[in-house]
Amino acid sequence: MSDSTQEFRALLQQGLVIPAHPLALTEDLRLDERRQNALTRYYCEAGSGGVAVGVHTTQFGIRDSNVGLFEPVLELAMEEVRAFEHRTGKRLAKIGGICGDTRQACAEAATIRKLGYDGGLLSLAALADASNAELIEHCRAVGDNVPIIGFYLQPAVGGRPLNAAFWEKFVEIESVVAIKVASFDRYQTMEVLRTVAHSGRGDEIALYTGNDDNIVADLLTEFRFGDRTAHFVGGLLGQWAVWTSRAVELLQTVQEVKRNRARLDTVLARGAEITDANAAIFDARHEFRGCIPGIHEVLRRQGLLANRACLDPHESLSSGQLEEIDRVYAAYPLLNDDQFVAEHLDRWLS
Image (cartoon, rainbow, N blue to C red; front, side, top):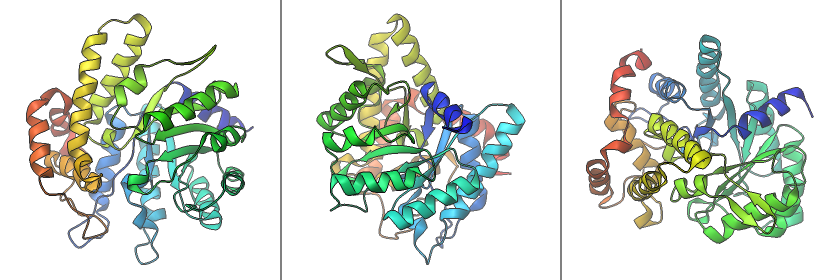
């Protein structure tokens, strides 16, 4: 194992806020580099422990040959993160998204390694009909190129079911450094946690919640499986692409609660508020069809994005979703970080 991989493992085990980076587009669907850079600066200065770029929230369509934004978007983010690291001395986790069949996934892994990313978040959505053995062979091939973070993506947004037998083999892959569980399903979440707990690799494989509908409960809970335990150390979340400085405060509060159980009632109540807000932003009422435009709408209100544009012009807010976002904005003012953004926006956009 290389020193850089060990350093990446140790960083992930600290427990980080890692936003899933959105894509800033102009009205004519071209990359808005100025606002793309502003988003990265926002995440860095909000206190994030890293960024994940080229993932679902960045829109998988950046890989289309007629779009051609996969490498440019990852390169832009890397330049901004490196500038922040150089200026502050803070080390961030730099994660690139990987998807497609084995040939495409290995090529993307090589690209993110070339650009200096620490590891790849590996989506298996493209292998919908593959057997467990085929999936593991695929993961090993990608892992030969770059440290990998397993990704349990919910089927509602393109993922596929992954059973316990798959995870038992997956955690044996040496290059696995973490798993993001975004199944939005308690039974499937427990399967992954149980597998890691019994693998004996809990100190090597960091668990990150991607369950935007259950963030605080995931982070607070010690999951017990007989004499073995597992716990989520941080989150890699689309929900944390908005109101990010508040997410950093939340994770710090959760870590304090886990140490001394103080403020438990308060943080559990905040968790329920976040779930309600996520339902509006992610459009849970309509099976998450408006999740990316919902994220864009919050960032547009803050001035970080100019619009809600997506690569697919048909991808838009669902009926009633805008009113739901209005509702949670009014109901939970402590969740947003509008003031923080307003204080720095001009500089980020400069």
